[in-house]
Image (cartoon, rainbow, N blue to C red; front, top):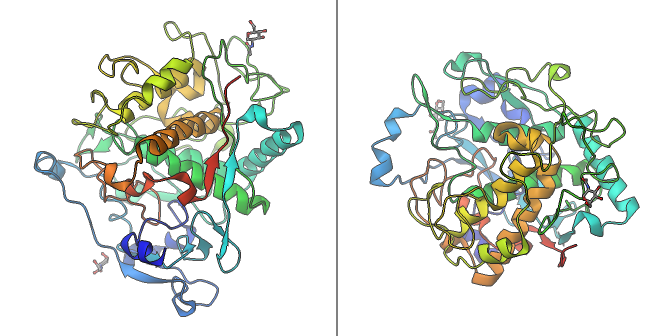
Length: 446
Ligand SMILES: *[C@@H]1O[C@H](CO)[C@@H](O)[C@H](O)[C@H]1NC(C)=O
Ligand SMILES: *[C@@H]1O[C@H](CO)[C@@H](O)[C@H](O)[C@H]1NC(C)=O
């Protein structure tokens, strides 16, 4: 394991996201340094051998086709985290986190020497008390201010002097990370709408894997429950959204409002109504003005069903992880079929399938990409997408070498998955989930 870690120095840290609160002081931003002191008073816990503060070296080698385009970009997220930090912690052995004060995923305890693999189960496999516990944990994450992280807001993305870092609750940091990553890429005066950092390319499954790990770990820390695992929703072959009832995720009226007596009726969407390109979540400090969650399962004009058992089987037929041009047009690509841009059976016919189909089917908040993570349905859905990703990894012995060179900005194999912090290389998310401290139950379907 030690040998492995020297090879993969950056890959194994616990998932924490930008921006660590202590790294957003004027001083830290001016020096571009994010090497906070740990309990022993030394940066990155270096005196205790937990980690070291390193100059951050760019690993990006843009392919020729893309290199020609790069100078046209003026995006704060490109070549992450270069625009914000050029010195960050690198944690040793089983330590992790932005200051090496936490453990890498799958390790626990003061000294990070306890190995643990949590099991993610289908939400209908949970007992009633377990389910209620999950909902109360989510509620706590939705209402507890994150002590470690802040979020970025601005009304004008082109004017860096207007960028501000503000408080958010733990769940809202999670929803914000997705929002931030899905925004169009900035050019000096406009936007490139054809790319995002989290979708439409090989980073898609790993990006979402990291997001879920972030939320899961934050809830473990918040509740002091190291056994906590996110549940998933196996929607295969469902006639309707059978968990859209008040015992589970909540029922809705024809307008899409959640029933007042359902668990998430009072939730508001961070960054909602502000998902236009030229801003980053400008209303974030006025949470009471945000809209409530909306859901309209089964009422879409054309997408009237959830994916079938066969769709999932067909998706797993595609043995090549991703193919050129590594975007929403890639054919016979496992990633593009899973993401839902191609019909699973032939891999070549454009259609709204799999991951995309479920977002559209559920409707409302879930169907608007930038704010979709506000609905906890997103968590259950993406855990199931991640389970299918994991089935593919097992079936084809997927590993970091399966991750292709490609020219999607931010999605190169050795680019840091944007905007997670410290750096995780995109390719290093393509590995067995047990390496990251979790696995999935074998649910056969309802
Ligand atoms: C990091 O950025 C700061 C501020 O721009 C600069 O002074 C410093 O030389 C940079 N360090 C490295 C290692 O690039
Ligand atoms: C799903 O369909 C079943 C059978 O038609 C029905 O009883 C149930 O109320 C529906 N559930 C929802 C959430 O619409």
